[in-house]
Length: 389
Image 1 (cartoon, helix red, strand yellow):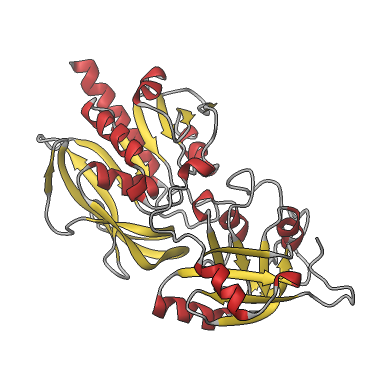
Image 2 (cartoon, rainbow, N blue to C red):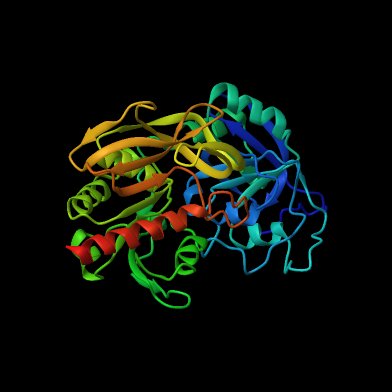
């Protein structure tokens, strides 16, 4: 569907927040209507990876970078098979892409995949509003979908909230698949796909790990069937409080002594498995410039984030769990949010760990890529201990 009217001018569009504030603009991408949770992303680059990140399921993404679409769209940088965002908000879309890898424009791809967006919005004012009021439901209406404000507001307020939403199964693979190790195979890992990004098994495979990607509905029997050396939980969308089956699976894996690594949603579920609660952040962390302190290395990393929920764990004291001693390993320097957890045995051995951010970060930064090496070391140490036993 064209984003332009019969006169050739862009179709009118309106963004309506659930608190009644509106922003006028023009259609960008598909024309129609969409609703979701309004969130903002502070990344200056990597919009293709953002749009195809399954963790954005059900969210209308507001880009704080003023110019979007400069590098067009290619067929190599997707993090999944399609665009997952519910809607897209930009200030100044590029008139034309300028990049040797570009195969089509960003708007062409949005239109082809039916993603309703809006351009010409004062995204600075919109972001400030979301920072002050918090992430909230929003609708984008363009073309014939633009009606009176009361009707559009009612449509937005009738949409489901992100809290309480179970979305991982909607974006997970329906069938298991294997990503072969690059070079000599060293380990086998079962990876639960809760919204996994393409680059994650690639980073594992680069380290000699054969990755068996399993659906979000997988059972512990499915995990055991691949005879893994370790277990991985991916990133993903929705409220971690809804993922009771995955938490139970993880607890069973910990009882089996299976080494564990989790990213983002996998960090939240690790926290729940260890007995901690989770909560919704006011407006979340989304972007590629978030400073995190790694207490293990005493280094600060600039990291890629996409999360609206966090683990509620004590920052400065250890917690005894049925599986070992849990500690907070990483902390966000902006707001002291828990950004990582570690689980140790009584003798100090590392049993599992997780981070709230994205060390695979296809669009960068790559400060945290060492975490995949840490997982490889964990698998190696666990195998050595088993061999000695």
